[in-house]
Image (cartoon, rainbow, N blue to C red):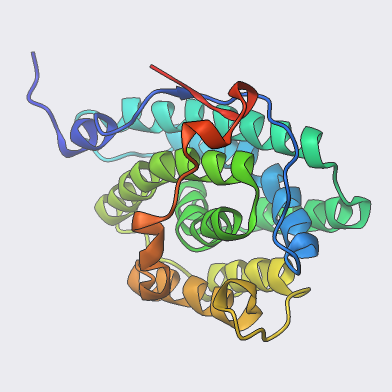
Length: 242
């Protein structure tokens, strides 16, 4: 039996959960258009799975557990896509946003950088902005789903960062511009509102910080973000664990 590697240790932090269909609740006034844009970017979940598959076909670190970790992350993306599809089934979608999201998807797919680097940058500085945005501006179903996905993404970011570091792969100005343009498009409908959760510049700044430093001090509240109590939700809005 081999020694548990750093990859094994990160994967062991994952929590088993199952997305469920939800009812549509009330979205935060003023955030609706940006939320529909963020939901349109669910089209990036399965491509992240494809990026990881492409990475598995390339040279990988010799560290034990790396292949299993990447395959585990691939499986998570199916679950995230399903959960977000349930949200869209409840709230509907915006046709114009869906079309524009497909153009953004193609830009990420066409980027020439290493596929695991693309997955890493997407998760760290795009998804880690969209998920708190869902959490502070969405309804109960969206807040719950964003918290569950966030736990997975925390392990993904750690694993993909380790792979890129071991391979000596560094980010590029092209991906920097692409991730910023992606977040800016989502937040464009917001104004420079006094409330930070509705302030477009605030969210872009968090993406900048996540990209440059791997952390966003403006989002520390997500560590203690309010989760819906069981009595607030009908059973249909509660995820299944274990």
